[in-house]
Length: 292
Image (cartoon, one colour):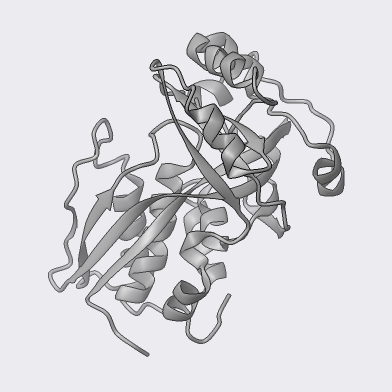
């Protein structure tokens, strides 16, 4: 197998095209149904191997303590799981995905870290093994390792690959961060939506059970929904602050984003079924034996 001392990989954003909360488990987690799709809007992580066992983040992450940093936690988890405490890495992050926006930036960074260091350190874990490791850090991490749009159940880690139309999206992020723990711990969160099926959602679309509560607690999210909703159906993604609307062409999306008020940040992006991390060349590079 080819060995590398340096590796640079994308960490894409995602959208939850819908999110149903169908119950609360005894362990405090929630049973969900959601439909994931990737965006061609990415952070970038550069890994350089070390032989002193240290894991260093070359890029300060504003507002995130080292103990909460999913990149460092993922690297340490892989190091411990595979018994390679003598190996380390310096990791540089080029950040584009907003924090706390429901776009999965932290989870995607963690997933790319697991995939990248698995190659860099030659630890030879399969995609399935990496998914199971990632799930111990966060429910959104397995989808980024899975690498294809998917219908998800359980806590978001039971994945069924699906193919979704690759539409253009306008994504708008108001100037606030939504705390996931606050939403899932709130007494007013919807927790009793009847289960549905992926076929129904693909045919009729869906809604986000977190949206009514987030809109109430964070007025800026409601403002973003109202603004974007004047052009097309607008919906919140995940439990974060970002909202999105889909369009059939890039030109339609560009026309809308050009009208974005200064109080919001936003971008246009193409929805993707195959994650940029798992594009054909990357897959062959990272998993030459085809262990997907």
